[in-house]
Image (cartoon, rainbow, N blue to C red; front, side, top):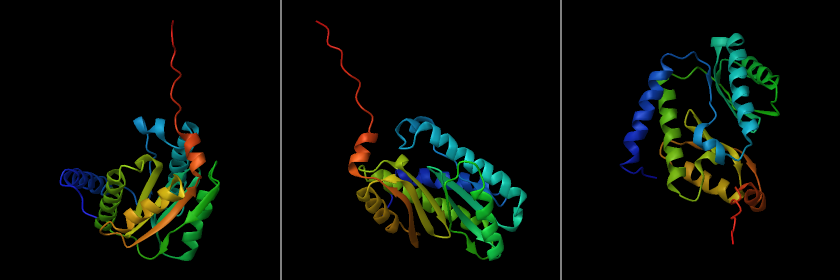
Length: 212
């Protein structure tokens, strides 16, 4: 998939900002929930969105204490299901990260995708952020998918998709991610809902008052 010339400069600027921010960060990175104007159309309740952000923040705080800088961890929560990605030097630290996150309040499940290998460099993480931006741009360009129905995380060229979506949306997003340059593998951490459930989640139009 090729990016439009209008979108590419914005993504390059975003990647530069992310790279600059990463250079001043500790090895643990906490994923943030999409807030602002997207809250109104998110398929999670407002309360769940707040819980997800709290889970990410509390997990990051605890992991900074133990195992600390021995690992590089990304924590991303969607509907209280937590994806942990990154690198740990051994299986013990990999499992320790999962145990720490699982004990955070409101967490209902942990998907541990940490690799047992050396910590990635800042340039590698910046490239992963760039790939994430391209995947998101591809989702926006489809016009038939809502970008805020998904969370996208990329680690070492593997893109993870999270969200509450229908089977059609899941397959469509997977194909888009797979066709994005730089993506080596796509892992779906998705909650599949029916078309009827999706219809029920759509905002209902306000009743029209007719005056005579």
